[in-house]
Image (cartoon, rainbow, N blue to C red; front, side, top):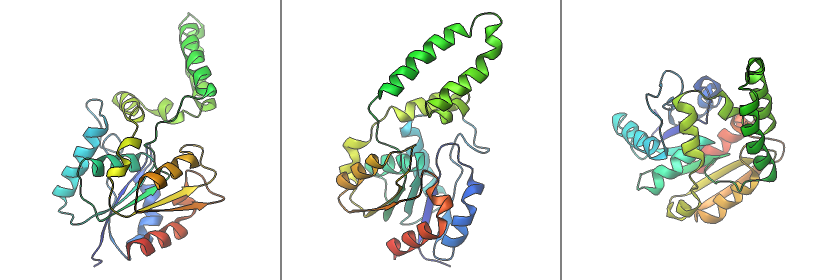
Length: 235
């Protein structure tokens, strides 16, 4: 059995089954843990969570599974959780950020227009007859604004997402003292390449690798290359 423990924290709305091809490769070199994060799979939330809840959950998970010296690999929202966990004193051997969330974007003109239109649309499609078209209209508007994850979230998960994205982790990045590998797709529209350079500049012992023809689905479309970089980084 491998002597290194790797915990993969998946992104928002990501299904653990999608990670199986990458996990199968990494399992030759690591004891791989791929938990379904609270709010996804069969892990339903009974209340809205914030980032501290997820950090506390990760602490409890590591303790429950008796995982020693874990290497944390976080994709998208999973990276956000890993960063918050480490900034609050959580222990890990190394950190791998794959298209990580955690940098709060400045509101763009597109975003401001979307918020105004969303408020107007909510009033218009609350009217009799027009409310029959509320769902498809909402889907179109959120898709156009690049907010499909929010649209697809329901109940406590929707408020949880709101709680997570309003937290900017930029000020705590310098607290991360362990080596970090940052993997990014140049064409990523969900977490912009500019964020990758913020992580690189703020985390002292970090290395950034950018893939020219990849986006946010980096760990799935380039699984062999991503696995090779992770294995090399952790040796």
